[in-house]
Image (cartoon, rainbow, N blue to C red; front, side):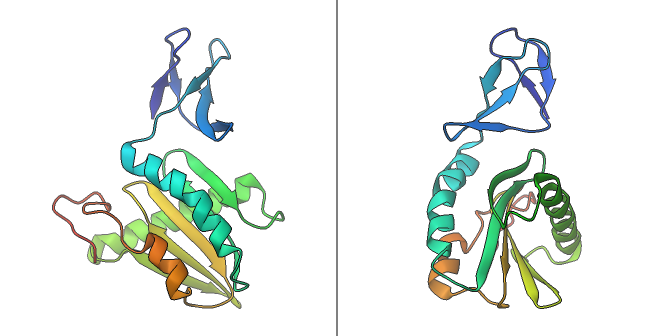
Length: 166
C-alpha cells in the first residue's frame, strides 16, 4: 500500500502506522513528518468500537487477550499479554489471516475460525476485507453477550462480490 506525505508529497510504502492520541499516522521516509492515515469508513467505525470491546472483554476471565490486525498494515490495536512482542503478534496475525483466506477458497460463508493449541483457543473473526479480530481464550466459545458485538461482517467483507456472510 502506498500513502502520500501531506507535507512533502512523496510516496511512502505503508508498512506500519503509529497511533498519536489515538489517531493513525505514518512517518514519511523522505522528510520524517507524521501524516494522518485515513481508514475507509467501515474500518474507522470498527477501530472506534474496538476500545469498548477490549474494555468489555476484561470482565471475562476466559479471555486472555485480543488484537485487531489489518492484512496490509499489521497490528492496529493490541490487548494481548505483554510476553508477546509486536513482531510476534504481526507474525501471528499474518499467518492467521492467511489461514482464514485458505478457508474462504472453499467455504465462502465462513466468518469465524477457531484454532486450539494445547489448552488455548484462538478465535479469528473477519471484520472487513482486510481487518481481523483475534481473541485468545481458555474456552472454545465466547460468551454470547460479548460475541454479539462483532457477530457478523458486512456484506462482501471477504472481498467476494455479492457475498453476504451469515
